[in-house]
Amino acid sequence: MSSVVPSSSGKGVGKSTNFTPELQSMMFSLGDARRPLHESAVLVEDIVHTQLINLLQQASEVSQMRGARVISAEDLLFLMRKDKKKLRRLLKYMFFRDYKSKIVKGIEEDELLEDKLGSSSSSSSSSSSSSNKRQKIAQDFLISIDQTGELLSLFEDDEVDDVKQERMERAERQTRTMDSAQYSEFSESRQLSFSKKASKFRDWLDCSSMEIKPNAIAMEILAYLAYETVAQLVDLALLVKQDVAPKAGDPFSHAVSATFIQYHNPTETHALGQTAGMKSSPDSPENTPPATPTPPTSGPPHLGKTPSGTMGNGSVSQDSSRAKQRKRKRSAAACGAEAQSDAILPAHIREAIRRYGHKIGPLSPYTSAYRRNGMTFLAC
Image 1 (cartoon, rainbow, N blue to C red):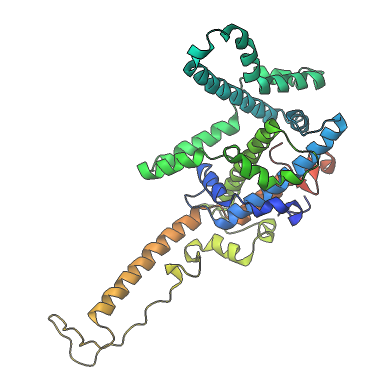
Image 2 (spheres, one colour):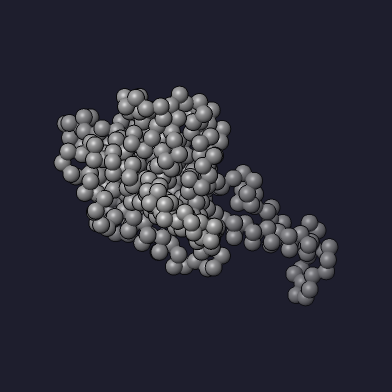
């Protein structure tokens, strides 16, 4: 992989729209700290945006070869055909999208049943076919390109998805110590997706400037792939974070690989060793200088209550304000250190991308079918 951090080539006009706040909530729901770092969310957004732009370029080329006027689901399925696990995951997503639309349409029909009694028999077959349109599109296209039956067998495959299972187990462990307010925030974060903000997502990808634009179903698939890319980045970054964490009894726990240090800046490297001492922002209470100690008074010590104004600069009001300030500093430092130690750092994400794109073996440069400009696709 030629570059770990995506270059600005993937940034266009649509990059003026950003998903950073939503990505922070998504990262929290996928296993990151309750308050993910803004820098990490910006890096994740840049990676996801770059990968989707490159994916759209490839899908546009496939669409032109087919002689189509729009980018459709068939073009994206063609690009994903070699990764059976991720293709099966996408087919399940398309199935559930059809199932959801069928339920919504059934509720609407039940509410208007009295108005449709005369035409119910004639419209039932058409409504059932339209509600399964995503599955039908996928099945018809895979039939046309599948000569061995491997792709069609994915429709009947009920194997447990290990990746999804691991994410659910991680989410369950996250919620064990949550109170009701934290769990409510976690539940809202889990419901976030790019498809729920379709107009913003289209602007983010700058689809209006494309010659061949994706249709509605292709945009659904792109939104799904965007979320899967975020989830996979968090999965890999958590593995890196666990790998670089010092382990008790490990004689090599103090050693950090040179490749890992290569993608650190000095502040991130310092944060790995001394997370409690890292400051979150220059305006935070953590960065306020300590109170200047007052010299002891020259008189004899008083055993009773000290009258107001007898201590010079160290009056009772100033002592109480300094005590409150120190208390705020300690609480803020504790919260900041805890959040910083639990959060995914940008260095973890860069190292995860480096490891994911690293191939072992003499034929490694020729083994990946999904490379463009040195970037390995995560979602397909």
